Length: 129
Image (cartoon, rainbow, N blue to C red; front, top):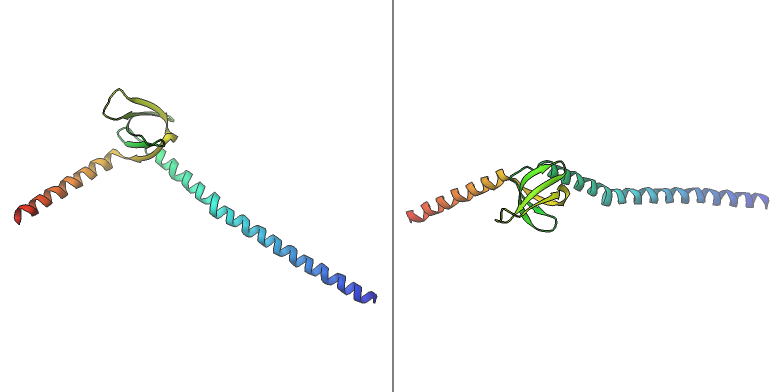
């Protein structure tokens, strides 16, 4: 009878060890899931935001985090001076992190040129008919 009890004790110890291994695997799985769902996308977004901040230059059209559109007219370290609307007296210094989106001045001019070329082609096509 002593042998039967010893064998039962060994079986529960073995089952407890595999149960512990499954628990460790679950913990590793959940830590990896949290990393890929939360930490990694956050780091990627921070890198994109930093890239956006680095490419700001005077003349760029920007949208602030509060939804205002303006034009960058000056820069100092982390401060950007933005001119809002057609009123030349509305110049507000703000932190670079308050800028949500940037449209470079070069892109605005290229887009305007593309639209003007399209409209001239349409008018030429319309005159031929």
